Length: 223
Image (cartoon, rainbow, N blue to C red):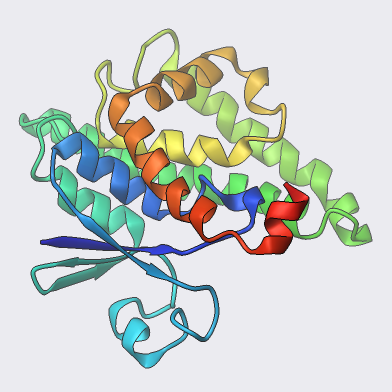
């Protein structure tokens, strides 16, 4: 039995971005059934000793597979990918390239995009954020241009869908609400192509369902 932790509810601005989505998607691509166990933001569940024992930083997701407990979405997704030819090529070169793109997504692209999200989402009205934003945008654009050049006119980073594309497209999703990705048409089309996969659509619906069911009254009123 595979169990994956997920939040019971999060604000709409981050719905569809919480990183259990990556794990759900990988499991759907691999055809592996799983159960979710829902936790609440804050001390009720997220900050308890029991949850810290599973996830040392109190984050989502935590992963439990018959007593094998893991944390960090990238590590969990790699573990799942090792069991699926859809996600991980069987030839040594293909495997190495897919793994390289996994690390590129999390190390070379995501930090720059997250920096921008932190400015736009958490501190948009702060003077320091307004001053910092142009530089943050420029760095994100530089990395995206390099990624765009590497992708070229290919459908996927290595010509076929792999776990590298799964992680890269979830990173690019963080840019929703901005027009930055549209400056790179091949990347915008690439993200859309990845999101059109049935396994992604199923994983996204599964993540969003508890948010709708457990939304506080104030959130429903706002919506």
